[in-house]
Length: 496
Ligand code: NAI
Ligand code: MG
Image 1 (cartoon, helix red, strand yellow):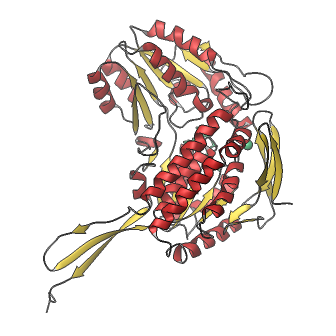
Image 2 (cartoon, protein in one colour):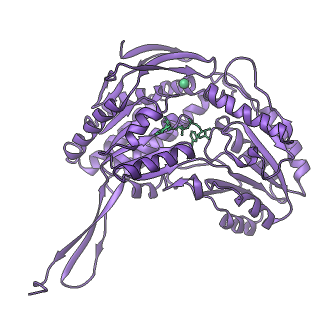
């Protein structure tokens, strides 16, 4: 089987690498296995890629170890930064192709995929800037001793990413890992292997030595599990479901106690007070749940509205949701494309049926959209209670519930009544309400009068069962460095 293939997209053709990317080369999997990736718009296979097993993980880890102990150590921090900045430039030069691959393989709108690529480039460049600004401290303890700390790389980092933002998650993980001098074995999601392989070509062009970044296509239970339990991987970073997050933590505990950071699910509240700018709030609430077809870990899926504006808000929000253009990712006006897979489609439709059976009222949507592709109508449920599954569990689709609250204390109580704690939002024109409620919400990110506005300069991560550690910003550097304390004796021997 050839290790690349010409693929046609509605915006033009390109050459798609299909191999595992190890030591700066595309190679066949040891066992010769391949798997197909599906276009969620028409449910048809796009192409088959090489599938990594434990054996390929071993080879990639050995490559990453060799690079870490040798060539990569000899690259100066400034040159590491230069390579990341060059990679960012290459992302921008290739934005049309990268966005087309995302739209094809993931189903997100081409116009929105271009924003993902711009953000991925921004993130890589941002961490390129950090590469030569990683430093420790000199700590004065006494005149006889000189103490300093070094922030050293952790080593070989396993990184397992999901399918909802394939290249953005790639950049979030690779940026801080490489900036701080680590090497990487990345496993992409089995639903969306293509864009990362194309980006791997750019790694070579950016000048990274072989083995610094290795990218494997493969399944979670095989390649993912091999990474989490590997004895020569020093750290693992994971984004995905809470259930797999727990498995990774267990695998780390049972193997070599590799350091673990987890970015997991959410059931985030979006709170609208009586005094909110209602039109502004509606547009952010709509974006908060329906962006990326509801497939966001931070999706604002529980909408809480103060009773004074509830009826007015619901009517206008319904009208707004119905205006979202659902359809072909390559149509210029499309906002919402298909869900990623048959499995996710069935899971979401299952939640919708569950909600209906439990007595919740479908205000808008509640059905599949069209007859081909994994499309689901934007859906709003009212008449919900806190114990319903659709209110408690992450649906990861274009489905939200709307609830009424009576006052600020009530809003905070409902908002925090979840095992998750990834994000939350407050819509109000009262400054005091904004601060008080932001402080009271148990979530890693709180948006005031906006939603889903992430920035690679600011940390992102979860309270409670939404995760461990922070990604993005300066905070992410802590996950990828370990502190060494060096104490140098200046004075005479102390004990004779
Ligand atoms: P998942 O957690 O199974 O997949 C995420 C990544 O983990 C993929 O690369 C997968 O191959 C890998 N993986 C799966 N099992 C593994 C294992 N045992 N060991 C190591 N790696 C493993 O998520 P999935 O099945 O794609 O989606 C299910 C649900 O997860 C969604 O409905 C959503 O609720 C949540 N999810 C959350 C995401 C987030 O951004 N936090 C992203 C994707 C899914
Ligand atoms: Mg696909």
